[in-house]
Structures are given as C-alpha cells and as structure tokens.
Length: 193
Image 1 (tube, rainbow, N blue to C red):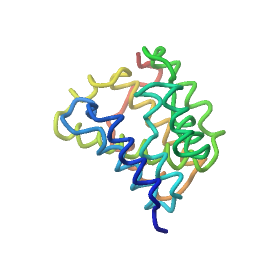
Image 2 (image 1 turned 180 degrees about the vertical axis):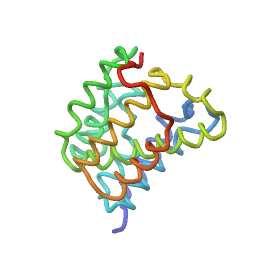
Image 3 (image 1 turned 90 degrees about the horizontal axis):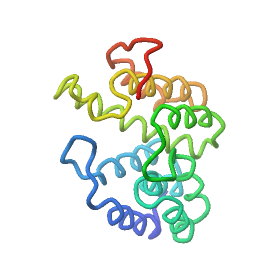
Image 4 (image 1 turned 60 degrees about the horizontal axis):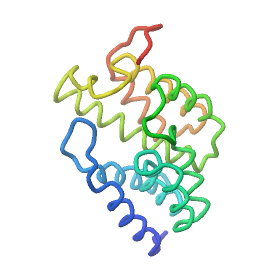
C-alpha cells in the first residue's frame, strides 16, 4: 500500500498541533509518539485512514476538543474523525477526575470497532514501552509523572491489556501484555487518583 498526499497533510497538521508538546517527564517532542503510533498501525496492516488517525489520535483530547475534531473531520474525513473520537477519553479542559474517566474509557473500549481498537492498541503499546524505558532509566520516580500514580497506572495498563487480549488478539496485544507484565506488582484494591 502506498500512502497518499492526505497522509502527508496529516503529518504536517499533527506536527503543527503538537509543536510545543513534549512526552511526559522528558524532552522528547510529542510528534515522536504520534509517528510511532502511526508506524505501528501500518506495520500491523492498518489502512491509511487508521495511520492518519494514529497521527491525530491525541489531537482532540490535547489540542482543542470538539473544534479540533470538527477540523479533522473536514480535512481528513469521517473515518479518521471517528477513530480519533474513539481514542479520546476527555473533551474538556481541565479533564475530569482521572479514575472515573479511565473507568469510562475502559468500559466502552470493547465495544469500539476494530479500526479504532488497532489505533488505540498501538497508542497503548507505545505508551507502555515508554513507561518501561523510563522506569529502567529513572526508577520509581517515573510514576510521579502520572495522575494515577504507580498503582493506578499499572492497574490501567493491565486492564487495557486484558481487554485487548480479548477484543483484538494478535502480535500487538501480545506486545502490550509482555510490556505491562514486566511492570512491578501493584496492590489490588488500591485506587489511583
């Protein structure tokens, strides 16, 4: 499959939207994450629509909410916009409380179409691998970067992994399970903030 000019346009659009954004607790430009997600989608056999959504999956959540989603729909089509919407867990700033927001996202995730699940899974794999790398480099201080703290973040990623094992089994789901399985143990019943 070759990519069209629409992918190029989405790449430029994503770079502009996230220009000043960095990965949590690092000096890595956020576009690195978006490129990685898009690449994982393509490597897993995803379509151009899914690859574009991979570039834009955080755009509405982090850069303008519904207005940004409307612009994505206008520029890149309904398919991309629907996937981006499915990957978004908050439309407002400031975001609602972390735990209820994540619980709501997890509850709806198994009901999402496979096209959206692939993009979400690629995102979660990239995030989990970044956490694992940072954990290796800075140790437990990495958990301070996350609203859910250590226990909440581990709970969230292990729950995601269980859902993806059922909803979209395959190599990416196994990759997530392997990465998350290497996270430290967490305390059942303890809730992230």
